[in-house]
Amino acid sequence: MPHPGWSTFRFEGIGTQWEISTPDSLAPAVRSELCETVAAYDQAWSRFRRDSLVSALSRGPGRITLPVHATALQKLYSALYRLSEGAMTPLIGSSLERLGYDARYTLNPSGPPLPPPRWEDVLHWAGPELAAKEAVVVDIGAAGKGQLVDLLGQHLLASGHTDFLVDGSGDMLHSGNYPVTVALEHPYNPRQAIGTVELGNSALCASASNRRTWADGLHHVLDGTSGKPIQTTVATWTMAASALVADGLATALFMIEPRRLEEEFEFSWLTVSSSGAAAFSTGFEGRLFT
Image (cartoon, rainbow, N blue to C red):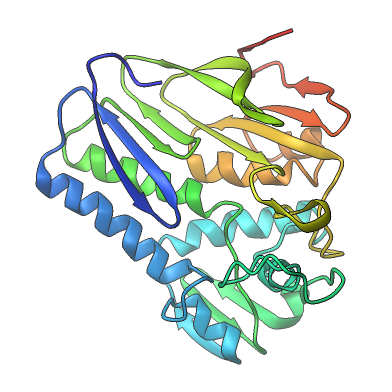
């Protein structure tokens, strides 16, 4: 939670709630810039709107030029696609749509799970340039909100705000001299916490299979090699220097052993399995409730 006495700017964007807390109120121009950043990100990446940049590729082969921040996303996704042997992929959108998580939120599966096409077969992604050999549904939801958290933090720093907490519905970035204590949401009861962690000058992101669930136990965290929901893990939390990395790794922990990720990324983590067992890294300095 932000510190008592801090001012909080709340707004909606990319289908979620945002809270930006600072010691002093944000000027109207800064607030407008933050909202515009969220709107521009949605217009570039949303698979839920027909006028977004990536939606053009869902209608047939083509090439698009994305904002410069696409380079950092490409680098992260490439690494996690390789480490997961294809399980974590930016092409998971077609599998999500087949299971009913589509632009109309029908939540009605059109057939059994199917894997998306392999990245190397249909997609060429180099920096901001994205080219598809056939119609593909690009979905960067596993790391996109984290990157947007970082972008908002960059705008705050550029406007002279060095103390802040950006909270995109649980994906957080903190800056300044006043760490905050964050509750870790219980994966089966959002009104309870399983513990707390202190966040200071870093990012904290979470992923949980219970956040978006529908018919017959279906949820939004899928294995890209099968198109099926992953059932072994129910919730993850990660802390890293950037929200982009923390967000991506929170999803990757559903598919990749932590020690493998630790070979290439600097982060700390906590996971809860479907059996209820918790595991965490030595660097995850939080307090778990018994």
